[in-house]
Amino acid sequence: MAWLKVAFVVSRDSANPVSLLLQQYGAIATSLFDAGSNDILEAGAETTTLWSQVRVEALLKVGTSLQSIQRLLGEHGAEDVRVSFVQDAEWESAWRKHTAHKKFGRLHVLPRDSSTEVDGPLVRLDPGLAFGTGEHATTAMCLSWLESIDLNGNKVLDFGCGSGILGLAAAKLGANQVAAIDHDEKAIEVTRQNAIFNGVNLTLGKTIPVNQKFDVVVANILLNTLVEYAIDFTNSIAQGGVIGLTGLLAAQQESIVESFPRVCFDSPVQENEWILMIGRKSCDDI
Image 1 (cartoon, rainbow, N blue to C red):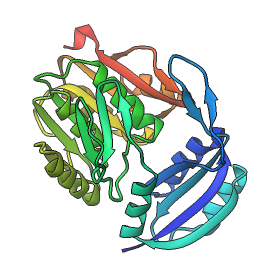
Image 2 (cartoon, rainbow, N blue to C red):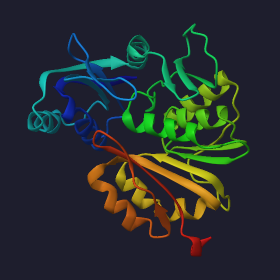
Image 3 (cartoon, rainbow, N blue to C red):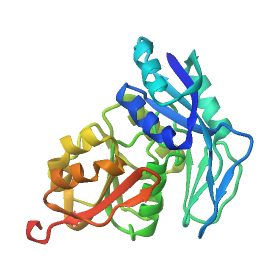
Image 4 (tube, rainbow, N blue to C red):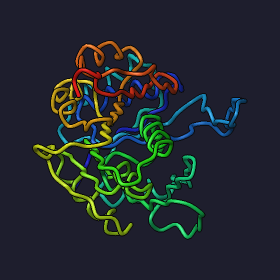
């Protein structure tokens, strides 16, 4: 199948907001790469790579309004804009070329065809055309959060599973049952194949299982969908369970608090402009 690939260069501060806006225009996948020859390093507990200029590649359906996309990119100072048509296999091959070993505490994420050996829980991944590789800040925050909590014997709901990376990570970290949900047929198929490759049994579907409670609910999707499913998510949380919501910009925090009145949220985890909101049901709601 052919897709429209839009590639461009923007500043580091613009990269994630533009990627989010492209998803609202229907982008089914986005990848971010260093556009410069040198990394900028930020000192801290761990040295973090910060790119001054970022090359963004987005995959959209053929027929998407190029005029609207060009206007959006112009508003964010995009340079070196290139538009081309690609096939599924070309996009997947490009991802493999750019993806490296990712580590989140004990958890490792590697491309399927990597020969690297690791000590600890490991997810080998081929995202296909689905979102979720561990590269994006929202995915990385979710993986770090899942690694930090005790998942042994837990039931986990991964809503908007994309490539299946969060559900697979939960299973590798000890979860007893994992339901991976996505409306996109391609995401379900990619998750199924990744689960088989990793020897993990996931329950796959397009809707949240009815009358089931989960110890951990995680959703890495856009604000509108989080708000739309707020009641369903809240009802899915088991007694003593937790929920992690991301795909959110810092400015959207209040919208989530208002949409989840039965959830008590901690202070958000933040990476650049992105946040992860973690909460529990209100005590009087359990």
